[in-house]
Structure formats: C-alpha cells, structure tokens
Length: 68
Image (cartoon, rainbow, N blue to C red):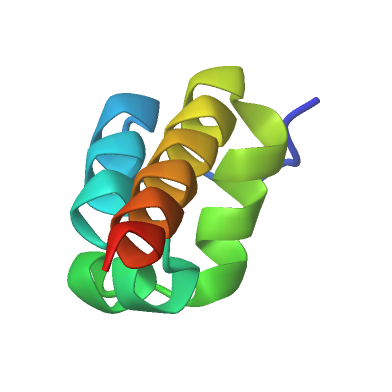
C-alpha cells in the first residue's frame, strides 16, 4: 500500500539497472541516483525485479572475485 504523499521517483527498471552498474552495492547505487540508501532498500523490498537484479549483481561480483 502506498503512503499518502509518498511518490516513487524512479522506475523499478532504472533502480535495477543502477544496482547492476554498482555491482550490487546499495550505497553506490544510491549515490548514482542521488537518493538515500533507504530508498534503494524500499525498492528492493517492494519490487521483485529489483530484488532479482540485486541478487544477480552480487552473484556476478562474487564470481568475478573468486576467479582471481
């Protein structure tokens, strides 16, 4: 349920893309978007596609580190 007065400024697709660009780092994604990290966490909680993007980005980052 949406709270009165709160609007969602970013599309879930945009947040998902930025999370991939930030390699799954929420703080970095928030810096790119110019919002607090709590906004990113709100999108992660609310939108399954953002949650999937975060998992994928973190998995890819982990695999890249493990291959070194």
